[in-house]
Image (cartoon, rainbow, N blue to C red; front, side, top):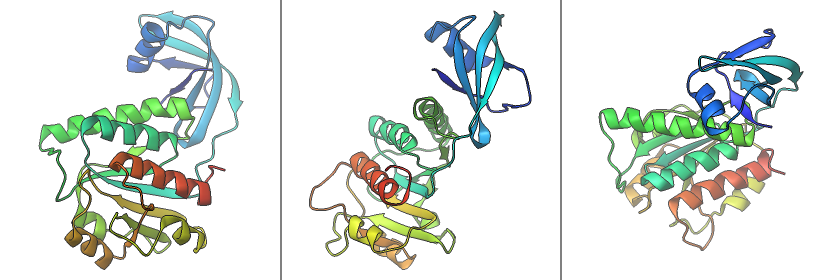
Amino acid sequence: MRRFFVEDLDPAQARIEIKGDEARHMLQVLRMGKGHSLILAGPGGIRLKGRIDSVEGGIVTVAIEEQLTPVSPPPVEIVLCQSLLKAPSMDLVVQKASELGLSLLIPFASERTVVKLTGDKVERKLSHWKGIAKASLKQSDRNEPLEIETLAELSALVGRDWGENSLKLILWEGERGQGIKALIRGKPPNKRVVALVGPEGGFSKREVNQAMAGGFEPVSLGPRILRAETAALTLITLIQYEWGDLS
């Protein structure tokens, strides 16, 4: 059954009006019409089952039939700080990380970042990524869309107060002594994991030292050299498997 996210969804309402992009997607792309069943999702994990009652002037009216059990958030909050990647790779990270239950994505600029975003390009990219995250919510049945912050600098992320119960990691191919599996299994589950993942060329030694000075632990995914987007998604998957709801 098709799912649609409504920003101001009110479970007390018997009829919900869908307008704008979501309505156009229903009518023009999915060819939905009167009588089609669907699920409306809202903030906080709200889920309402309904049926399209009418379509008029591009506005879709849904008659609510049932309130479904809310979707619970993952037991571990994962924050991915991802250095900017080329467009297809960054889009893939946003989409798949959202499906895997990532809580927060923060793009940042690093020394070896190839992509340079300034001015209006930053806002356009953020809008684009948030659109991908919103579409992914329908696929993966998240409780809310993936939150994406604006472009940051590595120094700001390293110096940020992430809270006492946060495990802070920097994924580095130069790390030889500490693998991610041994690290995770050697610690009690943390409520939050903050992970720094570099660009296509990886982190410089100076950046790794900077992160370590800020309390980030360097970890490796093993002997294979993975693409940046593959490394990020693998890391999220492993954390969700060990501490989250991917079981």
